Image (cartoon, rainbow, N blue to C red; front, side, top):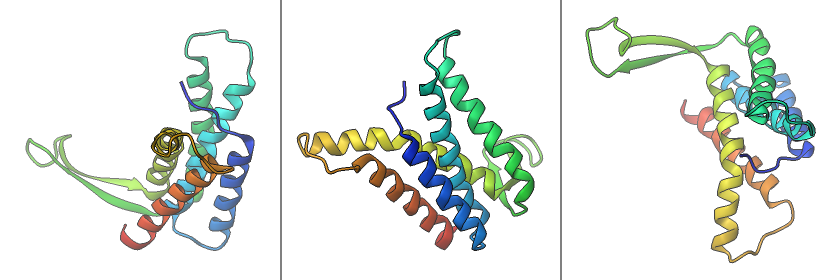
Length: 157
């Protein structure tokens, strides 16, 4: 299902998110780091539960931890941005409408996607270099991807 994530990754992303929020960084950027923290924490928690009681237990635990971390935090973040969907139909229909979305929520989902994608990207890098890797490569790659997405939100969105 998911490749392993360590508690060090979860703790590191949580500390960066707290620091960014303290210094007044944009809600979307804080959302990226908190989303990554919450999803990593969910993966670590799911891995810690040894007894499997129901199908897809790891996925359910991961999503429960993610949403129970992100959704209560929404109350502390006030900035929104417009999302215009123009696919088909008259204006005002579901597929042709302007939506107002919290920047923190979008950032949280992007942070979770980065955490999901990082192990796969790491595997591609390792296979490209024929099995050679550096110490803490997966951790470094995850933080680098989170940092790059943070820069994208800071300068362009």
